[in-house]
Image (cartoon, rainbow, N blue to C red; front, side, top):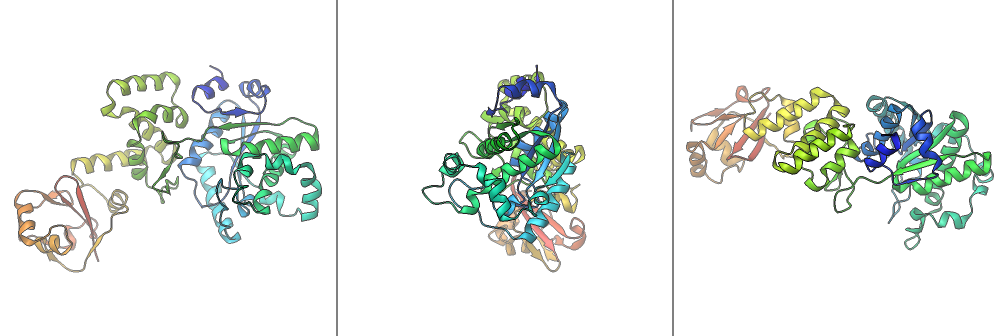
Length: 408
């Protein structure tokens, strides 16, 4: 199977600018770029699905450039329905540092910043050297501009495609970068760059876009209740990522394995067969979680995420560290303990049980555990030495109801 055939089988090709690109991709040796604007100091899982293309093409002998948009990030790519809020130059600079370090760590390739070749271009040179090559009717026909015409679009946003075209032109001229790849929402910006290169240099450049990875309803992959799943392990732990991936909808899981992992066609087809026969085992989901988390955070972090998940399922958290507790119960509002407290009082005072009578019943029935140990003594005193790392208390009521206490 050729590279292009593999990309098509995985569903990673939505459009290419020219049929000539197919042969060039299969031969190897092209320099290409993919970019992101510094709207945060970490990429999220949606970026990961796009940026994986850099590794796929590199494995096939192409040369990646990862671009962080220090200049374009100050303007903002037009959203379909409204203007993006501007972020300060200081925040952009902070985000660039985080993204650059992250991109080098995860993807391992050169990172460039378009601020470096944009900062010295004055407005007159910009209009003469770039603006004169773009017909306004051509720009208005682009989908990302057309979608904003009813609600309005600022001149700054309208000019965004010129800035991105300038990036492609600069990288083509200075680094022999022939190809830009991106998600499908960037098609208009990519073709603008191709046109600029053709008009100014009389040479051919190429573009390829991938479908945005979504769930069955069309919602972007990697968003949950409006919150991004960050690639930075300090922002989104491997356990959180594991829980998200292991609970993805069954109907999309094979599609995700194709687009988000380096498993071979044969391996994925074998997993698909097992998944169809025994979907309750969630083997496909586990394979997806293993491949993504190992690639992002390493094998040790993946194994730790599995351990936390299995321990919570069984109720055995005796081996948890403080960090395990924070990862497992992130988002759970903790209660505070300021002094040694009788177990019955602790359950009632923190609304784990509605009354002392109910608390005693739960304890007598073996339904209360403290840090993985079943509580049987109604007179137990909860003290610092019973806490994980002298600080964390995890109370479980019944099989699934957890409460987190912090001993101050």
